[in-house]
Length: 293
Image (cartoon, rainbow, N blue to C red; front, side, top):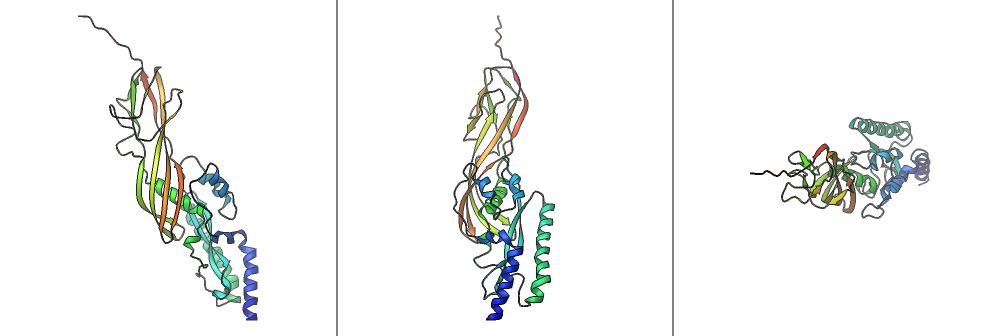
């Protein structure tokens, strides 16, 4: 018993030096519900949750394609299992697949280096791949899973393809914005979402709105239906002045999701898609011409 306590004490001391704040990553979920204004950014600022370098990626206004890399770390576990050490996870964000592969390999190398330099010699009974108790998949930080769902789902959402027939608008008459036959503002699907080494089955119910800036100085207008051609389209606008305008369309989504495997988690994220536009749409002056017979 004395030898085990000494071993555990030595392990915990080393973990305090190399693990630090990363131990908090195995904490339980805190709350849920929709992201409030600034809430996601405030949550990201916790150093125990994610790497600070991910802030600019995850809080951008356009949809972010974030790859979360799970790096293994040594953590303190049950003293009666694996000499009191276990494998936890630290999460960092990557902007590209190449960066993700590099971070993944660096994390694994550091994990194995500590094993080779300490545990394999001092504690030969320690095994490498014993996960910390409580379910490693359930211990993924909320902000990491939310962003992984956001990235996976927004990659599947229908994008607007704006068009105003016949390619120009006339002053004084309604210009009908068609956002494309494949554009919808409802998305109900089951997605497979990967977070590091863990795979989640996620049921998604997403609803969107379309905001249109008509480019003539008028206020942008938000619609809850996609644009369709004349005469049934609900998105239309009357220009008063002739000249070129840039029509900008932005979709905003509220994504309700429910993780059904391997754990049950219900939460909500929001996403703003990158703008699409009709550049230099020509608004032509319209005048009636009377023809006498």
